[in-house]
Structures are given as C-alpha cells and as structure tokens.
Length: 233
Ligand code: SF4
Image 1 (tube, rainbow, N blue to C red):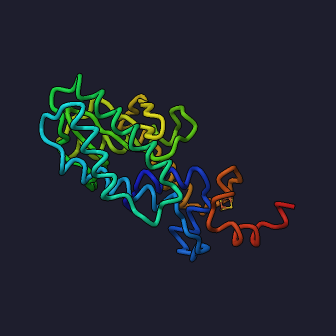
Image 2 (cartoon, protein in one colour):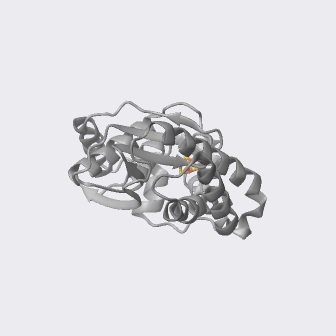
C-alpha cells in the first residue's frame, strides 16, 4: 500500500476517521468546504500561475506586482467571503518571496506541485528549489512544529532524494502571517518505522475513534456518534 503523508497523519490523528474515508469509503456529509476550496485555489491556480509568470531574476517590486496581478486574475470569485484571508495569504507569500530573493542563489523553483512515489509513499510537493522543499499553508495552525509536519517533511525528503533531488531543509510557510516553521528532518528509518506501525495497527483492525477538537470539522461525525453513542454519553 502506498501512503501519502496526509493519509498517515489522518490515521494517527483519528484511526476511525481514516477507516471511514479510506477503507470503508463512507460518503461524507455534503458540506460546502469553503476552506478546502480556498486551499486548492491557492495551491493549484494562484501559486503555480505566479511561477509561470515571474521572470528568472525579478526585483522585489516585480514580485509584489506580479503576485498581485495573478491573485486578481486567479482568485476564485466563489470564495469572496474569504477574500480578506486571501489577501493576508498573498501578503505572506510576497513577503516570503522577497526575503528569499535576497539570499537564494537561484530564485526560480526547479518545479512546483509535482507528484512523486517511492518506498511505499507518494505525495505532491508544493515547491522545490536550491535544495529546499517549501510547503505552503493557507491557514495559521498552532504556530509550532507538529508531529504531523515532522512526518510530512520526512516523507517529502524520502520521495525527493529517491528521485535524485538533494534536500537540505523543508520549510512550512504559514502564509497568513509569513511565519516559517522548520522541522528537524527525521531519518528515513524513523519514517519507515511510522509506516510499519501504521501497517501493524491497521493489520490488526485498530480503528478506534480519537475524540479531539477536529471532531468539530469531521464529515463523518454523525456516523461516528451513532456507532459510539453509548461511549460518548
Ligand atoms: S467524529 Fe471525531 S472521533 Fe469520530 S471519526 Fe470523526 S474525528 Fe474521529
């Protein structure tokens, strides 16, 4: 079984949710997940279009002008309620790009939004260039490096190094604030142990629900509540 970092992280956050979504393929409650569509708009339209439009050696002003033009053109009009957050992400993106312009020898990434598969894992890497992987976050999160980021960065490094791209650091850029989080890069052995732990637990049918603040956003909450109601009351 080939695992993505999000699948592995989902399992360790809540095995029951993983089972509903990825094993049983339970139909989730249909909600308009505007936050998810916002993330897709940034990752798949706005940022890739920016890198297609920007020159090899831009000035700080060109970075800001190009990013704003692309945002005006590509921002999904059905997400108007989140325009303020979109502009905060845009400013964070411009700030990060202008900062790295000062210190990175090569400005343009080697690739953006590219899929890799190796060693029992697969995943889409947002950005790679000059030995750095960059992962854009369109939400602020807890503001500290999480175990989930450590897993994600270790999987990304494994995928890229297996494909022949050396990785010195993985940067998580929290776009709304332009804060950059740098997890220590876990070893290949550690991530393989995480994979083996996942395989052992799922192999013996370990899918217990882990109640947490995430239950509020879980699209399987009714199903879960129905199955676990005697435990929840
Ligand atoms: S409601 Fe909470 S405990 Fe139940 S599956 Fe969803 S995230 Fe897990």
